[in-house]
Length: 347
Image 1 (cartoon, rainbow, N blue to C red):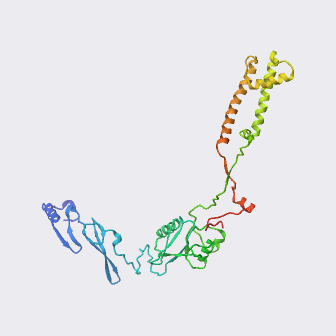
Image 2: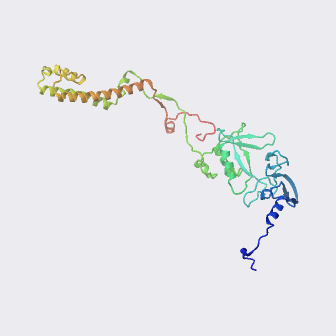
Image 3: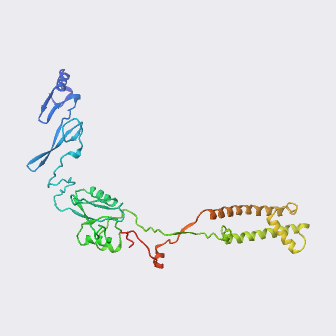
């Protein structure tokens, strides 16, 4: 018969019994215990060893319950207590990619104490003598190294020219790369034109700028004539012209309407004109057009009065503070003395 024709093959009635016997059978093989409970091979305990040259050393044990632990027990042990793994080249650095860190020389990373400890803060270990650095700039550098496809061993080297461990000048700090004293330097270093002759810079990861602390002054002089400041000179002039125009128009309209109240000598007519612009007396104003002109004037006067009152109240109660210096070029022109934060590039 053709063995490829599966439909012609016969099945044994003892198959379920054979399966049950296999599932119940447990024994120890070369790789550990063989247990097919629940129709799956139960994962046994693995002993993790580190092969170094022609020898080996224990790392720990791995189980499904405790994962990787130093001792084979029921309590889970922290992986920090495990023996370090020795990689090829006798290095404990985890290799990445195809390059193995076999070189004994580490990348020399220059750091210096910054005036802003949030960016770089350098500490010296008095026991081991190693330099430790923390801060935002250090975190950016270490994160960039982790993302490389290969391992880069590095060590921090403190740069200082003073007794207190601080740097005299960032220009001198960057110049050390040109002198090959350091491979790279990290910190809150500003990219300046003169520094590009000695080193290459990465892309900036923070915004740079200048912030000045200067005295403030009240931009409004609260003197006797402050009541004139809520309105601009043009608004004052326009309001006075509109005031006179309204009085003249009403006076002419009433005069043409033969209103006896507006007749008389010129001083009396001027007084009536001013009176019409301020008050609306129905007994004195007889024509309908005159009343329309006065209503328009009164609406304008109410809006103007509300705006004037609000502006004057704000000037009398709220301080209008303005900086005495708004641009650094003003300081350069006037030759004023300024103070700066130690380590700032504005020096």
